[in-house]
Amino acid sequence: MEALPDAAVLATRLKNTLIQYHNLEDEKWRVAKKTKDVTIWRKPSEEFNGYLFKAQGVIDDLVNSVIDHIRPGPCRLDWDSLMTSLDILEHFEENCCVMRYTTAGQLWNIISPREFVDFSYTVGYKEGLLSCGISLDWSEKRSEFVRGYNHPCGWFCVPLKESPSRSLLTGYIQTDLRGMIPQSAVDTAMASTLINFYGPVLANGLQSKLLRMEGSCLQWYSILPPKPPQCCELLRSLVQNTFNRNVIQIRPLQKPGEGI
View 1 (cartoon, one colour):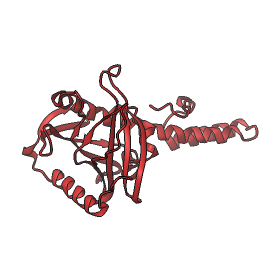
View 2 (spheres, one colour; view 1 turned 180 degrees about the horizontal axis):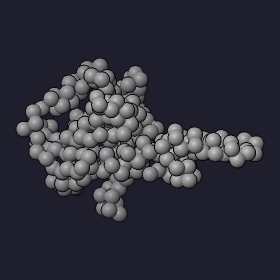
View 3 (tube, rainbow, N blue to C red; view 1 turned 90 degrees about the horizontal axis):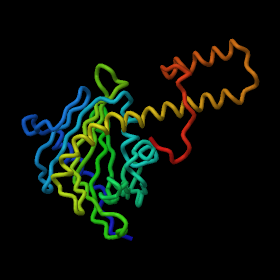
View 4 (cartoon, rainbow, N blue to C red; view 1 turned 90 degrees about the vertical axis):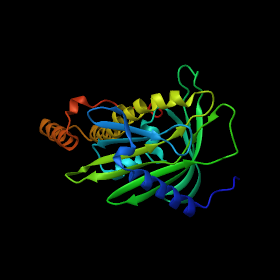
């Protein structure tokens, strides 16, 4: 068994580091990429020879649901197609753990699969939540993976004051993939990766949760005795109003392992 860190000390130090990033003046950041809904900034990292990236955008879901899809747990594997495994190595308490996760190879495995061992901590922050992490120097390594390293990183998620059912998600990322990839290449790709995190990736993950809920409604409906036409119309209206979509658009549930 590895020598585990003092969880309370590491959690406090990590939280304070992320709050320090969150309080940096605007002039410290330079815009790296911007879309209609998401902005990515960057500044030289003080931790390694790369950049600290800041990402910010709005997610159409509640704070707890958004963070549940980011922090360690089964929801993360539901939507993150790059992540191939996630194991909790040690639980300190409900919101604090050591996890090991792996990512897929890229470009026909020219970029080798990566492995990370991170300390993860989730804590309340103002009206929302902060989920943060940092890699540990874990001696056990597997030859089929290159060990990457996440310097202090995290996600602040707070409800929008004018629309509490939506969330403002602000992230700070500084990842060293190591191996043979030049850090400059990682920095060039990171802004686009973070843009996609908000759009086709995280948003689709939350959308898949609704589809599973819809599918459950239809499965329940299908095992009931034969329904008269008025009951069919009533259930169709109920599902449509609940999920704000036309029932005709519902698709069968994916088989286990078929992520988005």
